[in-house]
Length: 348
Image (cartoon, rainbow, N blue to C red; front, side):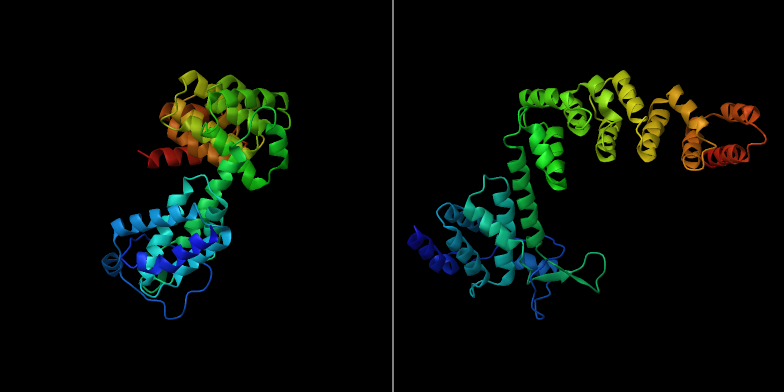
């Protein structure tokens, strides 16, 4: 097998000696030479053919199915060093390869190639899209390769999760893998049956694993259970829940949305609870939320945000009534009401 792969390496320059394709980029790592070519977008397009890039990428990926890890690395280096291809052609193929392999079940050779490309620095530079005095790599190969590794890591961590192992997997996971687990749960990546299984286990450990319980419940549309654990979730998970329920395309009923936002509004993190109250007041004109915001007006931390929200939901009559009922000696409250009136009038 090694002999077969090395033969492919020997023939690679000739097979890939046609033009390839393009993509915009940001920054790479390993060290572009000081004389790296600076090309315009038009020049890159003239040097690169999308059809040829697609064809050569598929050939390269096919060869990786037969390659050992050392031979896979040699194939990449053979492409990098091919003297018969201009840098834009080679980098277009490498860029496309990082995307092509992302959706596959990776072999050891695939992983080796993508890992190698995470350290690649583009040799093809183009004018920075924000400042013409600076350059940027034309092909974001290193970052794209890292994105492929991240996607594979996501697939790996979520592949075998179920109710019997979710707690151990969560406890053993680092911050990145916990995010991957939650992303898999939010996207229903595991299927409904496994989500139900995981939710049941997570609810048995709700005091210590509220993030799992809240996320699976929300994905399953079990708003009551999600509301029960929302206040115990971490701020990041609570914010994710808030964004989901506040999005215009959520499938929840009005009552369910309000119930969940009320639960999130009791979160210990004042920023999270404040966002939930603001959403309840602005989007749903919820009386309880509006009253809670009014009570927060004298608060030195939350009062200003409460005033800004109330300025958008209260009428002139309600503001006048609030002014009339306010304690004249409460200077902070009086200042907040003045702010409400000012913002309300500016918004006319």
